[in-house]
Image (cartoon, rainbow, N blue to C red; front, side):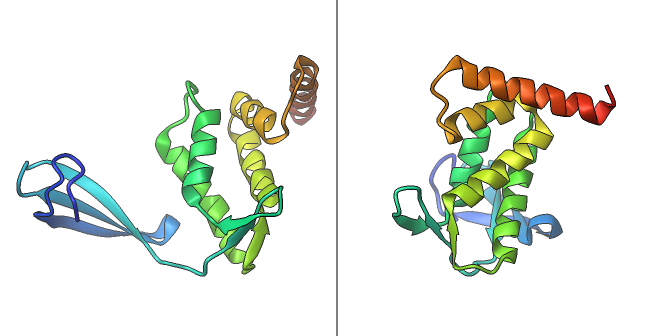
Length: 157
């Protein structure tokens, strides 16, 4: 394993733990060259899912795209990286549980929006504005009013 700090391949595993939540192995490593520690995760390589994009093109599923999209939506919000990773893990697990070889980007986007709706209203609106391609302030206003009404219904107001 290459050290992310100095690039040396002279590293050792200090601790390994199974992470049940995402079915991975967490390894704490020590670089023998610069003496810094870092963490790596090993995940089981599962059946490859192909994503069918809006324009009909196909590409391999890439979890990092979900993490990046959620991270952008959550920028400057009080949401930890761990929570973002947990959401990405949950979405990835749902996709794998469907046992489909192909999934549309629309299905993935809907799963992300569902999780962001539960997590943070601002992050939800940010993601929705890009995902649904908002092109006017009225669209922002409509979704904000819709969210407020749904939250008030849940509170019994």
